[in-house]
Length: 327
Ligand code: TXA
Ligand code: MG
Image (cartoon, rainbow, N blue to C red; front, side):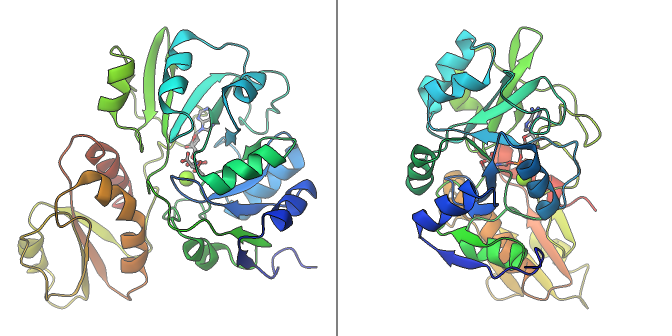
């Protein structure tokens, strides 16, 4: 069969997904953060398939997904105290740890780096899958390179139909933002990618945790989620302070709006995606990518978006919005 023209099935048949993964195929799986494009994490040829489907450059490494702390420890050479504390607090859940890799982890997974990114996901279906499989899963977000991450099976279908045989449907993702990535810089634990675990929550467990000081780019292997253009709709997106005022600058254009709280007075103008009427950051995170997918599919000329408060999950959401605005 032409690998680029597969029939893509959306369903909940775990036996089918297990059979496909045992045959070294790549499938989409749900997690609590975003959907992942999953395959055997320890086989270079499967890792290559994932890169090809995602059209991702080979220097951007993949996260290894495993069942629990015990299985995670098989894939690292060191298990420092900070990792133990964070794993105890946040696994299973949306936290990824970057640690020195053990020899069983192929360098294809880490793009040649000596460190491997590991996470223990919380989604029940995917946990059952990991319990049943004799190997861990490599899974980048199931979107083509630089495009918006998928938070429903339908989002995956729209982006990858014909390229993968199966999408395991686990419903809409509960968190809606990628995992937070924590590693070490020297002897200090640092956050490399903000995500569904907030900095405040991390600091309650590790008070001395820092945020990564440099902006890393795609051409550097230690670059977790830090490429400038990323998470982007195809429709141009502009960030602004006052949506209504900004809109007056584009009288001839078909506009869409990404709105956070209430009271913007935009209810009847163009296409409006409201992230949280109550101004709740977690609710906004959960619906962020679905709102961007909806706006991107609405045939607009331009999306105007406002930044959220720079606290809690607002930091991670704003990080995604800033990258979405890059062109
Ligand atoms: O929530 C998530 O983390 C989702 C779900 C599917 O688990 N996965 C995800 O994967 O967001 P991906 O590939 O889209 O983003 C993973 C990020 C990339 O930016 C990559 O550069 C970084 O993690 N990364 C992975 N392994 C790394 C390594 N060994 N060293 C440095 N960065 C790494
Ligand atoms: Mg991604």
